[in-house]
Image (tube, rainbow, N blue to C red; front, side):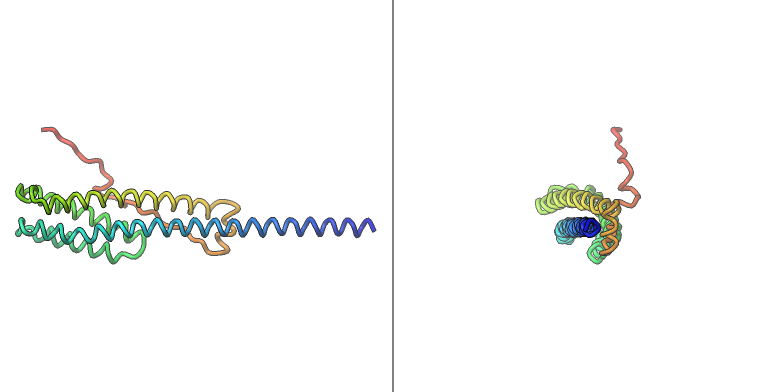
Length: 192
């Protein structure tokens, strides 16, 4: 009788532990799904802002072209960088293409600096302002994405959540970051 009571108590204890483990696994899985969806949403927000940026660039190039006919190489570089950015698939490819596009846009604005009448053109000024606003939105969206990627990556790599993450193939996400080059260097300021 005592052995049967002890056996029943052990069985109830094991069932209780199994229920706790199952509830924990379900809660962990649901939390990872929520983080993954939040990360996908953050990436979609970057995509929205980049699409807006891509739509502004041809108008900006055409406006500058009207004033600077002999700057063909700069226009081609901006157009090529834009096309690469539009067709990029992965986060890493997109980040690299965006870095190239940012550099090409800097060249375009440098060309614009050589034409005072262009700098006074209302259409150019409006496009430049919209692009600046979009760049700020891209920067904020990139930061939001990277923050979510860090939280997600940390969660899937920490104990004991990593067991559920590995079981259901939650994989690490790349950060959207500057890979190097002039974007990482501090600008040089000279008052001479």
